[in-house]
Length: 236
Image 1 (cartoon, rainbow, N blue to C red):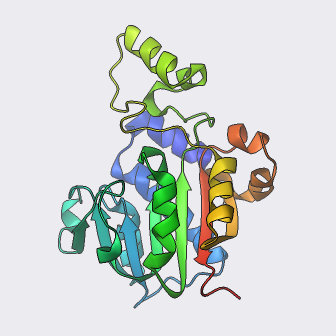
Image 2 (cartoon, rainbow, N blue to C red; image 1 turned 180 degrees about the horizontal axis):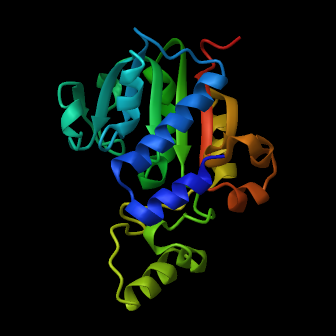
């Protein structure tokens, strides 16, 4: 369980590159434990990569990583890597290619059209490929990001109250932060039928994977939802 270490790091240093590297290394451990090989020659797409920390950790393992995001925010040490500009809400996604592993970490809650994105996601996978999806569900303790826990009052009232307290925030509900739910997202995946869930767990305490099987409780109990998906085209 990495959550206590993350909370300590955030309290001391906020969200610095080490904080994100800790998350990435722990997620990579879970992905590997789920049976995905991560080694030299594995083609990876770090989608919504931000500063590129997650993909950077995979590069250390020998993976061939392509980074993609709306703008290039990569840390200097990753600027030699291939980067693809893409807006996941509005741009066509065919140009992103096909990969053995697609990483989409903490992006879904920032999309205005998450179902459109998920319906296309299987076409980013090479045969036998896997899709790692994690996001902060709205009813989790961090669902409102910097204005948590006021988000439990609702996206509008919670953010307005936060503003009234004189605090600064980056995330704006309905603009760059959207309400997401684990159950609804799993329902979309089942209904759309192109991707199936191979493994799922609360990202920062994967030992409690059973929690994601309990409707209702999982919405509040999972700080961040982690799913490992595969295309039904290559399943079975």
